[in-house]
Length: 485
Image (cartoon, rainbow, N blue to C red; front, side):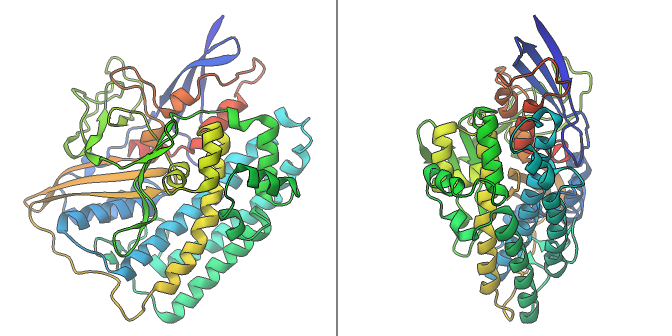
């Protein structure tokens, strides 16, 4: 006997996501992911002055607005042939990392862990401790994380003037130079978050977490004191409810590379990680396409974003979402912190994914490990700032130009593609991280990463909102306003 379930909303920030499940014998046999709200930012940009994008695209999202700013600025920089000075690279990286780490903190404490305080888990031995730490609006550690996050964003006031919709990210770097005294104040804020993480989240030095070489080392570290710190409690819960078996990804993960450095490298490397082969493949960005077969958008053939178009067709037969289906060389990929850590060769994540695949467990673990790795990088970028050197390169955009801007938001690979004709934007296309992960089926009928990951997930008859489905969806961390931009 099969049944159809419609589940949603999911996120605790914005709920524009609906998942249609076909259930048989108590398990999901098919899933369709629907982004039901159309917004049309790509059309808003057409015909405008190119630099208007720097004001408009951050408004796509109030969670990852710096990421959108960075992608737009890089597209304009690419079109103008600009090279950003080292101070500009470091300042923009600091702003982006500030936003990304705040997002990781929010995801863990406010979006993901509160699900383990539900009545469905009341009989578990860790339940009382989970409620004490993570209960929505009342959990001690959740409230402490909110306070830490609020203080953390004071960095953005110095670096960029405000958050969200920071205005200092420009094609040439950062429009806001950092003075020597401000650098010390910024370092104090970074050290304050380090103290919260080392006391509450990890109960261990960040460098100890970042250096864990494999899953055996992680399990030994966990076994030494299973409830000390929130990472250990997460590991206790994950093992008890078998999160490593939930939400298997497609086996290929995509990272554009995060936090560019002077000399053309990235602090976190780019690449396509093939888990089955255990190899990192170089990215061929020319093979990115978007397929609109099952989107409420006019479709003919899959197109590269540089040639793509977005034309609403609300009554289109076969459509079930406003999200296009991005593909890399025709293949489904997953993106996010897990993709960045796999591309960068982080030993613990490569070992965990080799054992369990991209799963609910490894996705959340990747975000925590990334937090432990990136905050010390921020300390080094602050130390590398040279207050008397330029933070921004002068820019002159040609009347006719084109470019692309790639970055890594908290949720993964974000790309903007821009074409300018006669001094005006003639073409603008955006492929957001949730677009990759929450993709619908393509012309071949191949489901997207989340759609496939939900197949096989248990749906008990007595759960109107299946908790396992919630875990899988939240492990991908939906941001649907970016998806439908």
